Image (cartoon, rainbow, N blue to C red; front, side):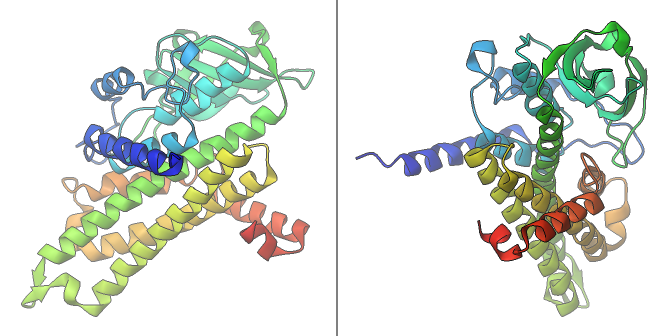
Length: 343
């Protein structure tokens, strides 16, 4: 009898090792410089079938699921990859599939439009070939359409990490779009939040590695920094918060795989993961800068590439406060917090 679990684990470990080779540790941009889309890396991802990892094989995807996507996003986060992995596949590609639209070649991002046809802080909008938009028409019906980048009014902007987060405007009166269920708008938010959580977990793992490397090699008063109890406390808190964020993210991925995003259990798990990761980001970045001292604040050091990202990502697809509020509301409604945690 074949042990499918063992086989799957072996394949996933091989996949994870391959990703570590694809995503080396990050761009070398300087603080304040806008991060440029890494087209060479994108070409590699496309060649390996990673740019549309979860897409249907019939439409050019690789047919994988959230388990594999989680490994991809974590590796991309650790490598501070300047590519719209989540946006192209898990958001834009998913919207097209949900709407029954064919997605050809090209780089995509996605956005939810407001009543005036606008959306703020759209990831990588300036660099993509098209933007897949989701909006509610005058009859309160949700619709999806793909719009060429050239037909979108765009104002360039960036986040704290200097990643492109542009403001767009679309003339929705000129769009017909394809009708989709109202639940798609909610699922879009949960998908985006889980994607950012996974990338943040990868980035925090990298931060921990940088800190351990520094306090082990740096000598003060005749011994490595890591031998001082105060420094050990800083590092242990980073490790603990990173581990908590990873555990919460893993639980959310497992819930999504088992139950789908329509399940209340999955949405609670995603909210918990987003909350844990958002709170962890504050501790991890603060302690990392304390442990590294002045060198961690320099343009030349790698730390800022990861720290600024996790601080930015925790405010996308919902703020930490909004996820905390959602968890509180779910706990009050359930009346039994333990059952929410253990289900």
